[in-house]
Image (cartoon, rainbow, N blue to C red; front, side):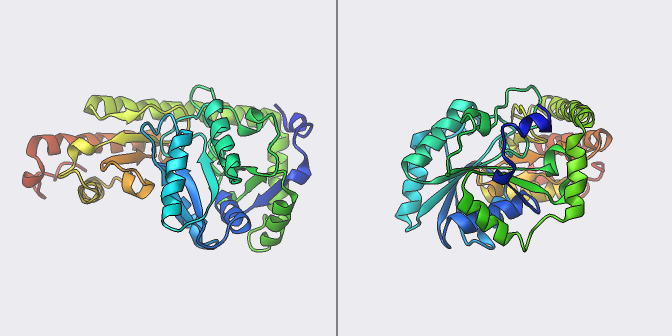
Length: 341
């Protein structure tokens, strides 16, 4: 669909810009909730959400745990998380869903998104759907909440997207909010005095989005390169016999290194993370930072570097894994780790 076709469906006066998705999420929390209110987020989730919601708005992110995070939360999971938050004296005001999911790389089916929104509406809550990786899918199968709801967002569903991930343009600092809540849009307009998008940057993005041939070509090439690095990464994980969540979108793999921890605690996870950094110069996001309940889960962001650097990193990771399995933690020392780099 071209931008011209999209404008037949999406009214420009329902769109707001902000200096990145983070600022829009902060503004949404400030506009729709009060200081100390709770925001439910299916876990594991993007580590920066905690700060996005708290620094300005003072909201508290509450993880929603489920038996199978890859499938997504059920209504019972959402109700359980809400009840736990309320038991702590918190008022639950928002539900934040990331689809495709970060860090899992999974895609929630439309039925789950609809069910989550229906649950939120039953509690008179607002739902924010973050679709930052919507155009970075490996195999297709993604459906936007806009299509799921047949563009009937009412006044309580709000769609967030940005150029940062799908276009690799984090430095542009341009995020978009699509909402049919006019009072909310007026609030965002007032708050954007602190985080607006300059006219020159708006003109750059306008030229970019009006060029259909460039857009389709760029995204096709981007998805091919993402798939290449993804396959390189999981091939190495398979060789190491490291379990992972099969990804359908995004730029990361969520892998299970729990069998390699010195002990099954988050302290053990931190030791493993430090070993990777000190011995191999590898950084992976630990599961604790993403509110996972199981120690040893890590997000590998394979698209942050070139395939050549990724291959080098995976070779180093392979060596670390081999040494832990061979020597165990009690026998690891500077001498046994000298050949990692």
